[in-house]
Image 1 (tube, rainbow, N blue to C red):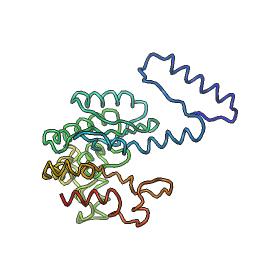
Image 2: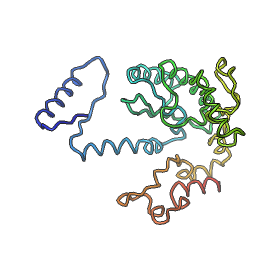
Image 3: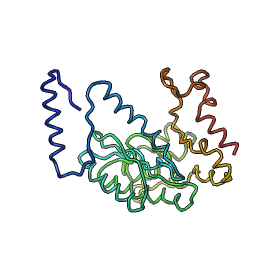
Image 4: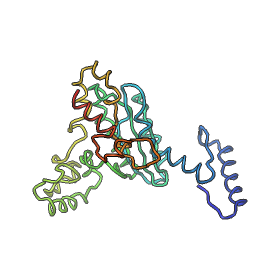
Length: 272
């Protein structure tokens, strides 16, 4: 992103960079888009914000799943990290969405899986373990933004000797483990955890109920008849306050989530 008070100098800087992109053969590029002025730049930013919803609208039984989301590594290692991350997914012949914040080294990756298939469900564990090891290899964190809870089993491995400190904080505020039990840390301090990099009291990625397990109980005919409802990815984009956006009028009028597309989809799924 380039800014300058002098339009001519700004144009020179942009031209120098686009010339570099055109001439640099050390990296394979599909191309680039030049956005000039606030309206064009806002369109680029809007595309980023809508990316999760767009991914959720892919066709077919395999849907992007956010189980290796928000990895973060030092930006100087990001290119190598992406190469190995993609190799792990490509080796399994998976389609996936990948975007992120290059300046912070954060990636949003959503491999497409059919969670109704028990064999594909097993990939959750397989890929999660591999990505956790890969992230640690590059000195990063598995949870650069969100998603610590269900992936808490990796906490002792990443926090190491600091993990007992988390346990002490947990014990001070929640000694009976009543608040989100199994997430982040357990209240019982155990220095032996450092040696084995695990805490049996924490949730595991394949030890929680998964949506696909419930989806398997829905009759295939009902599934096909109500596919728009059962494919709702739950990202909540329909909870929209923008008066200039057509989604969703009933939510805007009532502020009741039951009357949002997500709410109606959830009701239909429960009914099925």
